[in-house]
Length: 145
Image 1 (tube, rainbow, N blue to C red):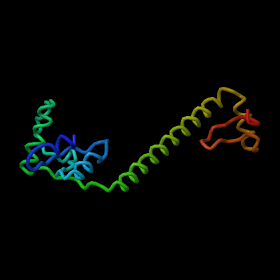
Image 2: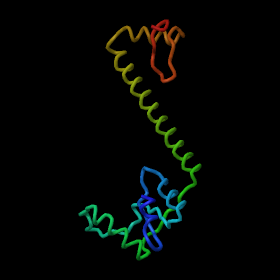
Image 3: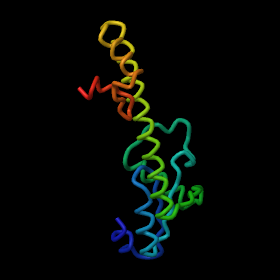
Image 4: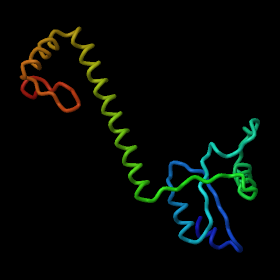
């Protein structure tokens, strides 16, 4: 994409909507000397009735808005800050997944304890320390079985 943009004659301006792919395209275009802007999708002016979307219209409207100066670019973070943000998001997702697994396992154990007398014995043994509790909160059983 950057090679194609760099091959165009005259001053080249480009824009694209921010998305899950990050800001690599912006950095590559800026490195090649191309004036590139990253636009937040929700800040783009759109008519209320504009729901018919095709590839042609999806490309034509931002072009017209860029030429008219109607788009407001977002601040592109540095590469280090982007990596730190990705790491923070991944950590939060893992934390939420772990919490969901803990809740699922505890609900399963709670539901099965009323049906099976062995669960009551297991719960009593866990209070005495005979049962090893794994980090996610799941009972392994007496003596690691």
